[in-house]
Image (cartoon, rainbow, N blue to C red):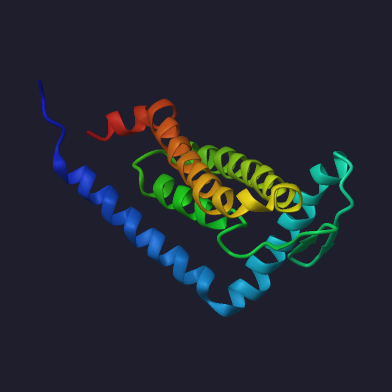
Length: 171
């Protein structure tokens, strides 16, 4: 049984960590936060209100605030899906694959993360309105774990199914 060389793994981890630190530094920069992240989060709040309206909830959205009659949720950084996307983007860009494969993976996986996150935000607002006693548990323990695990799973699936051939050719 041939051993896989250690160097490609170390290079991947180094690229991943550098990219992740760089992305987090970028989104923490106030002008980027104020002019990109906050407007994106407002879109997330408006989009998350749509399924709630679809099930008959009377929802108001003001910026990043989603209001129902007995519950208001402010969608903040960490709840907008950006961090899960940054994790995913850093992993895909660090992985030795073709640019085409990376772009396809980034597009599909980022869209999937956002769809999952919209469902998450809608569920949390509904839980806050109707089952406030379990909201915190689902907000912190359940949904955060699901979104991060989904991002990791998408990367693993992409790397196995779509990026394996370029990696094998680079050996």
